[in-house]
Structures are given as structure tokens and as C-alpha cells.
Length: 589
Image 1 (cartoon, one colour):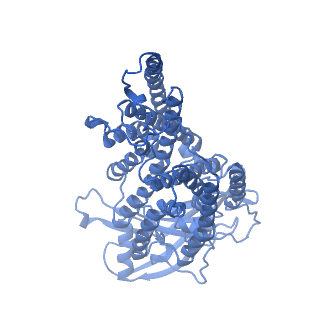
Image 2 (cartoon, helix red, strand yellow; image 1 turned 30 degrees about the horizontal axis):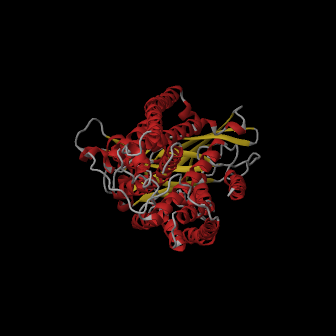
Image 3 (cartoon, one colour; image 1 turned 90 degrees about the vertical axis):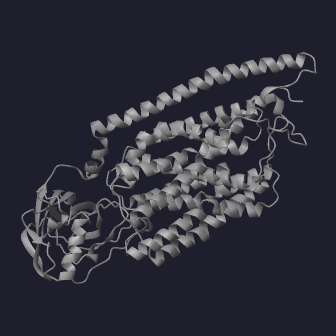
């Protein structure tokens, strides 16, 4: 297993170079052609609903070139094509007309609908992003929307900063006085122009991306992030203190009591968690599903750790197009062997016989729901002709990765796990027949316990969740990965501690069915995160429309399901360690 992890680390580190190769490091001479690529357009408040730039009736230049994109860029919805603007290195232009066009009634209507929905455009120049709105709505303090006036910007002003022979920064400004009136459905003459200005700067090339990461490092943002960490740390300290003072004192009293009972008369009746020592290590029902859940959760936990490693070494710098998606696909494929090994090994420890069926279940447990969600959402994107719809070639590449990399590694890991011949280490012998569980109050049932277990970890991360959501489902830049990693560690610790505490109270109530309960309690934070999705969508965002709504709730359901499996695995592993420890400390007859 150690060799497997070392090999996996080497493969992932080698992929870092591939991901970082997206950064442009070109040097230019005056007059050199530097292509400006138009990427996409779409409603500003619907980040998933984006379309090709020339889906709007802009002037299409002759010989449009499509930029060849990597897998992650396609998954990100990027569709770069050469723009009609000519921005040669250090060549200035003043109000140059690049197109004269008579807009038909249909084209005017199409532009007006785009302006009404706050359409923005995104372009790339030397791998630097540019944004701008395509038009504006003049409301003039009018309450009736039918009286609004709609205008299309027809003059864009580029300002480019350079340092010697390199491009450092670019910005685009729309001329508010150069407009095309789109209010009425009638043919309109439009003359599209652009201006280019070059200015020298002393900013070194290595720091040209700092401009984009500065927004998430502003003092007031950092204060909120640190408040989030302090809030989380207080939660951890309170919970740790609770466990240290209550559990340790109670356990100490239990150990003393049970030691005295062993020295006293044998006819004294056992009570509490020692009473069920013959049942506490009885294997859970649906052991194949349980082992598959642990395997998938372990894989997702490993995936998350590797993603954090890449983030902390600076791979996911702002607007490194598709780097995160590329890393997710590659690392998930390479870590499938961990899922197979963990699942098959634990399944054999649980005396399971159908290990092949267990491997199939492991391979489908997370990928199955993800595949069904993707098929539905990709169909929606195709219906909308959005760039989120994956081309057939990209789907073939993903299928090949799953067939040639993920599945073989899963099988190899499963064979290694089956042949490991590890035995389940149970300190106590399991009796032939299970004891009857005494009647318990309602608040000791699974759902109330899951609510308690999920609330505390969620309360430790909810402040940071807003910034993550605003980055993934908005246009905010998130680069403070070190703080995010600290919050993740706190989440793991709180999940483990609260699951251990609830497992102890469950055993003290003589309820020995703790296996599935500990997994469900650990993973219940994923349900709270999905509940936060509802709050964020309706209270903190302006997203709308069927496509954006389905993408938001569909993919967030998959992400929260992944959190459920990962944190459920953390909770069970912590509970298993705790249960083994306390039953080793007493003599079980």
C-alpha cells in the first residue's frame, strides 16, 4: 500500500507540470501578432449558462480560428475563438472601425434580450482574462419595464501594460457615449470600433497574476476568514474539552467499576457498554454496501488531500483555465486503486464472499449517481446550445479514461485487497445470538443523532462556505487555500470527535448497532451543506432559469454526496478506533 501511494504521488506530481504549462511565457517584439481570443458570453448571474461568443450576432471575421483546448478547459465550458480585434504588440489604435453592419430586426431582438439579462463577455489575451458587459439598460427611475431603453456598446477601449517584451496586464472599458439603440424592433446601422493603448509598467512578469488574487486577500476579507477560523477553533476546543472532561471521566469510572465487578461476586449483573461486549463487534448488515462506502469515501478523502497539495504549491492560480477540472479527473482516475483495495480488504475482513460484486458496487457507488446527473444536465445544456454541453470527442476521452485507467486500477486494488488476507481485529469474542436492544427514547434514534452530528461540523465551516460558493457559482476569486486547508482539518477533527462521542452514548445505552450509525452521523454534514445550497440559491444569489437551477442543485447534490461518503468514512474510522480501544481496556469473557 505504501508503494502504491508513493507511485501515485509521483504520477500526480508529474501532472503538475502539465497543469502549470497553461501559463503563457511568450516574449514579443514590437508589431508581433498577439492573438485575442473571444471565449464566451452569458447572463452575469448565471455562471453555468454560457454561450459561444459568436452565438450573438457580432461581426464574424474571416478565417475564425478555434484554439485547441485541454480536457479541463472543455469541462470548464471554455470555447476560445479568434476575436475580430487586432492587438499587435505595442501598436496603438484610435477608434479604428473593424466592422459596419446593418442589424436586422431579429438580431436587434437577440441583442436586446442579452442586454436585458445582463450578458457579459469574456476574452483572453496572452492568457490574461478580460471581461465586459455587452450593453446597458437605461431605466431613468421608471417603474414600468416597458419604458426601459436598451443600448448596445459599440466601442471598446483596451489598455495594455507591458514590461520590456512581455504583456503584464490588460483591461477593457466600454465607451458609455458610443451606443446603439435596441429599444425598438427595427433595423439599425451599427459601426463597431476599438481603441488600443499601450503603457509601460515596472511590474515583473512573475507577479502579473497577483492583481487577480489580491481581491480575496483584502484586509476586510482576511478578517472574515480569520474570524471563521477562530470560530472553528473555538468549536474544536469546546468539543475537545467536552470529550476530555466528560468521556474520560466517565470512561475512567467505567473502567474502575468493571474492574471492581470482576473482583466481586460473579452474579452481579453487567450494565452499560460492557454488557454488550459480545455484540459490539458483530458485523453490520449489508456488509458489501458498507465496505464499498468506505472504499469510495477513502478515495474521495485521498483525492481531496492531493487537490489541497496542488493548491498549496500554487497550481490553481487565478484563471488557470480548467486546471482544477483536469486535476480532479486525473487524480480521481489514479486513486481508484485505493477505493478497490480498501473496499475489498474490509469486505473480506467482514467475511464477505462475493468480492467481485463488491468491486462493481464500489466502482458505481459514486460514479453511478454522477453519471446519471451528468447525462441529464448535459442534455439540458445541449437543448440550450450552451458551452457547458460537452462535445462527443470529450465524452469519448472521459469514457476511455474510465475504461483504461479507472477500472483496471480499481480491479488491481481489489485483487491486492482480497489477497492481503487481513483479519478483523476484535478485542472481544462475538456471541452466536445477538442481544435484544432495549427500548430507547426518540432522540436516540438515527435521524436526531445525525442532526446533532452534522450541525457541529457544519457550524465550523459555514462562514467559509459562502466564499467557496461565491467563487464556484459566481465571479469572486478564491486563492486563500491555506486558510481553506485549516478549515478542512478542523472539519475532519470535529467530525471525528462528535462521532466518537455519539458512539459512546449509543453503546452506553446498550445499543450495539453502531457501525452504520457512526457512518451516517459522520456523513450527515453533507446533508447540512446541501441545505445551505437552498439558502444560498434563494437568499444570497441572483441565479435564475431552469438550466442554471438544474446545474446548481444537480452538481451540488453530487458534491454533497461525495462529502457524505468522505466524512462518513472519517466518522466510522474514528469510532472504530475508539471502540477497539475501550474494549481492549477491559477483560471481556
